[in-house]
Amino acid sequence: MKQLLVLLVLVGCNQSDQSKPTIILTEIESEIAPTTCGNEDPQQIIEVNGTGLALLDFDNDDDLDLFVVNASEEPCRLYENISDGSIVFKDVTNDIGINIQEKMWCNGVAVGDVNGDGFDDLYITRHGPNVLLINNEGTSFKDATQESGVGDTHWGTSARFGDLDGDEDLDLYVCNYLEFDFDAPPQRAKYKGQSVLGGPHGMTPQKDVVYENIGGGIFKEVTEQWGFSSEIAFSLNAAILDFTGDGLQDVFVGNDSMSNLLFVNTGETPIRFKNIGLKTGVSANGDGAMQATMGIAIADVNGNSRPDIFTTNFSSDTNTLHINDASGFFDDRTNKYGLGLVSRTLLGWTCGFHDFDLDGDEDLFVVNGHVYPEATMETMDSSRNQPVLLLERDGERFERVPLQGEYRDRAAVFGDLDNDGDTDVIVAQRNGEVRMLRNDSLHDQPLTIELYGQCLGAKLEILYRDGSKSTRWVTDGFGFQSSSSTQKQLFAKAISSIEVTWADGAKQTVPKVPMDGLVIIKQQ
Image (cartoon, rainbow, N blue to C red; front, side, top):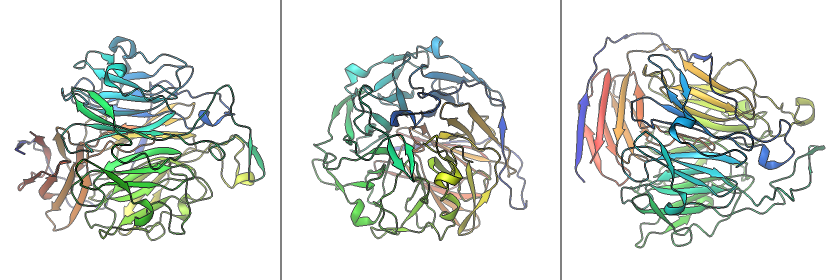
């Protein structure tokens, strides 16, 4: 496949020889309306997961806009980024034709250009049917659910776009949770001696659904045909990436209180996927225990150019880091990297690896909040409101950076909101305010590497001028019920060269990289 490289260099001064910077995330005033998801004190399981967020450039004006999902009382909302060196959003929901009306119980959102017209589209998961909104060149959105064939009627949680069959368009993986009837909800249960809302134990899981993009934004369901129907679980999140290093896109699925799944592309014709989660060690933690996976984050933590998997879990358990050893196995190295004890009292949701201080390694951000209103340290060893977990990479370990405040957080999205070259964060609480965290960390003059095309799943291998290396992937962030594209990768550490491996296996090398500015790499 032919590749075109475009270099657009914006020259600036380099602030070299600084000491190791400190991560500074400053909460700023938000004009975003609070999210809604059921009653303030939830009594049913459908009320506790909260709702998702998405960052997208819907109007292609080179800044990141915000989509906010709401369940029950309020409609979903679209906010246009109108900032100029600051972070300011304007509600354009009605102007742009977003028409996901109230009391529809939406949950999550995925972003992707499904019809190849260069504009981001939106897929919203609900307590069925799901909705596909096609972007009309940044002027409006059209409900194309019926004609596209993706109106799955299950209880959808997260969804992911990715090129599963290697034909350079975006297929769709939809995570489904369990059977829930508003008119016959489950009875309350017991947890640590306390009466709590019921589920998921004792309830019936629903199968995930996979759609092949057959062109022009039209899909057909291929769940059984491609080998995904053999496993049914309480699915909450997924990640589409080449986990095995064979150049084919695979699917990791995080499940609630059941074994996680790793579906690998077998390379057969016709296309076929096989679950090897148990065989590779990624289905459970190092003790063999199944966990309650909500969040997924991917990074090359140990420096072997393979994607490692970090997952967030329930309280009284730890989050888990599975290191990909490149031989076909994943090893639980949570404690080695300092990620175990620090998370034991927390109930984690969205997480993400991002280089907040631009020092060349990726830090970790995790939002937390309990599902049970009854949760206290005395009754459950975990409070209802919980702090954000910000962990700075320091050598082989992650060290906690204190942040003030405790919340009922669920979703988070990451991106350069003010175009100053570093990663900012937007966090959504369950039935609470949407918080904006501006990155004020000190760093050298930034370099932005931006990929264009169907770049989800692309791999970047970075060689720095000091001889060190790192690997990153272009993903949709894998946030719980959320999506934030990483097609813009941010650096301040001086880079010598970049090798890009696209999702279809094609490679492109950028042999000379400027110290700062913008590097655009286009796929053709």
